[in-house]
Image 1 (spheres, rainbow, N blue to C red):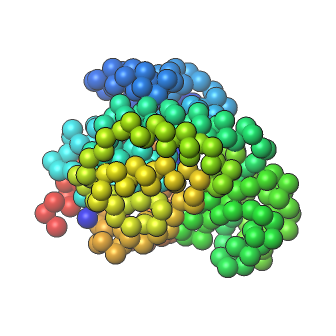
Image 2 (cartoon, rainbow, N blue to C red; image 1 turned 90 degrees about the horizontal axis):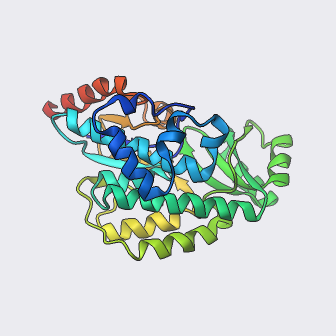
Length: 307
């Protein structure tokens, strides 16, 4: 089983969409995506600086657009489709598109709304996020409860991203649980926590207008790593995910239980293949960062057909 993973974060650096724009049809596709998301993806993906493309309103549509472009190119070049797909955080929108639950235009419209709503929610109270590496999970969760912090991403491989008030995050960094290392992240707020509840309501209103189809590929949810077979349920889970933890650790466990033989991470790739090297040891991975990486992805995908 080959699984496609759609990142919620990646190596989006200034100009990272430039090599993709050299491919036939990508400029037109990005123009349509920009209109749907209400974000100039060509400008931000080729000219904007690092600080600008970290802005939640810009970053989320850029990430999903890059994933969809890579997905379309992969399917165009390969002899077969992947067997399953999952997305990390905002990557779940790309996963719903890749599995035909929603179309490209709907996905880009929703990610534009999601990015703006989460940025607005983050602006209400100064909050942030930190990655915690190593240590005992139970001890960490107990420490988070003491500080009124929340686990936001269970990434597997001994990595949990936590979120909450900046002062509490500072205290965690200065007095970390035994055996842990705390790394502050450059994000605008406490995503995937109760601080994002206003964004949940905004996205729920937007989803009411969407007609969803049943997934055409095996589709996993961040909620608990389970397989989702109903399109409407997938959309409901997508909405709730904004204010609930991302359980990528459980997704990887489910990949393994379903017999994963390879993982392809779509652009802007790197984060999820890195987690897979620790959480899915021995499983071949390909990070599609630029069009040059597509040949390796196609080889992995096509090679799986005869196994």
